Length: 202
Image 1: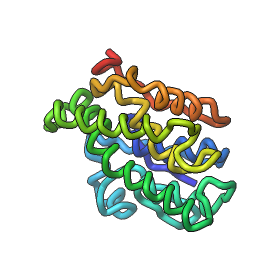
Image 2: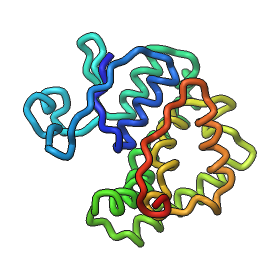
Image 3: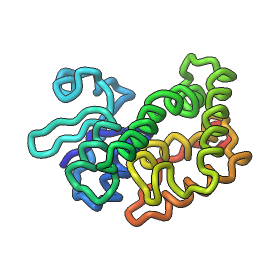
Image 4: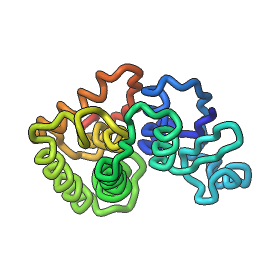
């Protein structure tokens, strides 16, 4: 397997983390986003949207981080994606949050401090705290987002939640969220997300 990634991309880390949790041998291929390598024809042939990550597995090409999680969970099994309708739907709900509220809250706030993205910082930080408050409530009495063991729902949210302080999003008011992140970090095969000295992490 080859994973086309960039170390500062939370979406790419999401896929890398899951490959490592599954102990799957893979080659990391860094795509130089700063020089526009993701917009070159060679990469666009893999993903016409010009985004990392992309997984290549014996001729099968899977763009998009949550799609990669679903692909690997189906291929490897092990309970990372429940097979029952209710469990699968519950995981899908959190994958939607990863692509929605997480992307337009904590991830967007980090893009402001890290790359100077033109988001309204106050607005995206507010969205981040709204999501964190909901997660804090959801994790009352739970170790994991869905069921009694980790799933790809947990993997999908980890990278941009753990790096939220880089976008000036304070995690200290959310002890359950912080404990949830620590549980993921304690899983066998965990690999950390690259840290940047910006925002509250400066």
